[in-house]
Amino acid sequence: MLRRGLIVVGVLVVVVACALWFITAPKTLPASDLLAGYHPDVANGQVVFTAGNCSACHMTPGQDDRTQLAGGLKLRSPFGTFVVPNITPDKQFGIGGWTEAQFANAMKRGTGRHGEHLYPAFPYSSYSLLKTSDVRDLFAYIQTLPAVARPTAPHELKFPYSLRLAVGFWKLLYFKPHEFAADPKQSAAWNRGAYLAEGPAHCAECHTPRNALGGVEADKLYAGAPNLEAGGRFASNITPSKDGIGDWSEQDITDFLKSGTDKCFNEPTGMKDVVASTSKLPDADVAAIGTYIHALPPKDGNGKKKTC
Picture: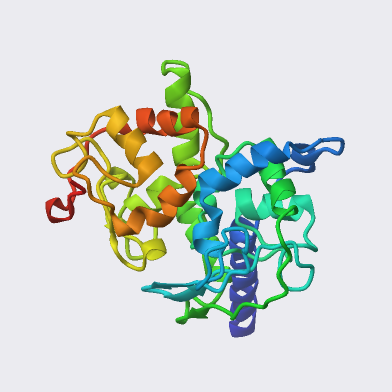
């Protein structure tokens, strides 16, 4: 009787383990999303690259060439230290040996080249909103950049965060991949700004508080938070509230993203790398981001960290 009970328990454990694996296993895009015959628009890929500010994280520390994307930057977090990878076209240490599909799965599903979960320090929660064509264009553009044969160190994460399997459970809780859908009630400028801000520019990833598991607190979207990309400096509340930028106009926001100087004539250090990219975007795209940010619902934040 005892033996039979143990067998039943063992079977149940296996069934539950298999079910959990199936639910939390890395996911990939349908093959139909990446049909052959697509001709990438490299110029558009450069716009996506610039909007995503890829250089800020992937540029090798200690040099100013924003096309030298050999990684190495260390992002310190409560979970340990993430080391940004080399994404140059180098075949050994970069992504030169990746296929377009592998790149798209990393961007839109958080799944690595070998089918492993990627850590959400890489903001695929935002990148999943990108149109697949934009991802393909981005991949084509990155292939035009200099290949740098430089390895990066492994992540230095605490247990159990060092187990990639745990990322599957994180995704189950916080990752809802979907492409951006335009709101027909809004203007074309608002929709373009929403796409850029929520997708490639991943503004919410830095400007929104996170819970103990690193999930974005959706009810405090854009209300301000400590920012890993800015060395732990506080990313301000950018909603139109008294704690945020409620007294900024759309033009104030646009001017700041172009010049790096806010309406109080300050040059916030934490936004320096961001503005290095936004200042190079087409004027219409920067204005569209200004339109979208200006229309965000106001949220209370940390008044002591007010932008201006």
